[in-house]
Image (cartoon, rainbow, N blue to C red):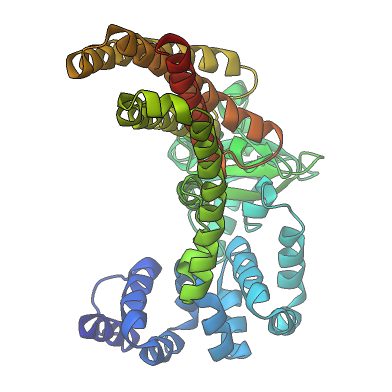
Amino acid sequence: MQESVDFLNDYINHKLEVETSASQIAKNLKIIRKEDKKKFLELLKKLPNDIFGEVVLELPDYYIKNIVENVSKEQLKEAIEELESDDATDLIQDIEEADSIKAEQILSTLDEEDQEEIKKLKRYDEDQAGAYMQTEVFKAFYDEKIQDSLARLRKDKLEGKLENIHHLFIVDSLGRLIFSIGLEDLILFDFSKTFKEELKDKEDNFLPKYVKDDDNIEEVVHIFEDYDLATLPIVDYNNKLIGRITADDIYDFIQDSATEQIYGLAGVDEEAEHDESIKEAGKSRASWLFVNLITAILASFVIGIFDNTIQSYVALAVLMPIVASMGGNAGTQTLTIMVRQLAIGEVDFKNAKEAIKKELILSVSNGVLFGLVMGIVAYLWFGNIKLSLVLSSSMLINLLSAGLCGAVIPLALKKLDIDPAVGSTVILTTVTDIVGFFSFLGLASLVLL
């Protein structure tokens, strides 16, 4: 911890010769907080306002309540003023969750322009592109001389009004987006001309890729991935340029979504897991374990139906877990692939039929292969050809159902507007256990007795 304390003290006292990022500062603060919460707050409050807000946004969400309770409204306000509009909105919303009254007091002390921008961005739903855009965007005018536009851009950059400039967005007299020019192309232009003169006969080369403010954020992610973009302009319903989304915002969204999916597949609440109260984390896990207990009882009930069969043929009890285990693992493989492909847009309802068909073919192939293997193992083990056939057939049936359910369950949940990552594994495990036990013991009752 002391190394992190020294690092932050050197930064605060301007003793570091290398540039330090907000994420580096946040990383060291997290190390300190694990051992000394008082020291954590002491060093956090000493950070300069121009990086304080960025650092807070880099820290885990469950730190916010403690920070809001101990940091003054004035310091939080000054930190928000230093942030770009999208980050300022995120920080205000984080403060609101911890203390809505304090958030309202801070918001009311900001200048009117900042207040309006934050209120505007807060109105968007979390799945809309507008919720992730920053309103600080430079507009160059179609009839403007390029050198005049660049002079304005240089002035804004020197004053710290703009960051991460990769493209120049050209608008008409009504503010509607018409062209997007990368800086590497712009340096080849004749600066003494207007954009209209320079773009004559080559407009098609600079038609912009853009999204509307109410488009789904997942569509925006796909555009960034498909075209390897650094920034993307956002327009309203009139095609007016109102903001932009940068690659770092998309990276954060992808990272958050991936984390949420991992926790969801495990049936764990991310927020509760990070909560410092063992009681809250325990309650979150216990709720899912209770659901699993119910499904386990259902599977046991199926086994109970065939208790006479098991008593008559003890070998069934030895082989029974293999069928359920293979089905569960095979289903989890399919489920993981489908959830991932749904998340990144490779699978949707239009091409779902092909995805299901592929999983069924793989399931049948694996069912035949491992059914044959286990049939041979059962015969060598117990010397009973009928038992081998029962095990082989049950293995094929369960792997087929596992593949089908692993593909269909996420699609069905998506259709119902439920996160496919949440609850899928519980449903899948229930199906594979019940189908596995029922097929194995049912066939055994018919063939062996």
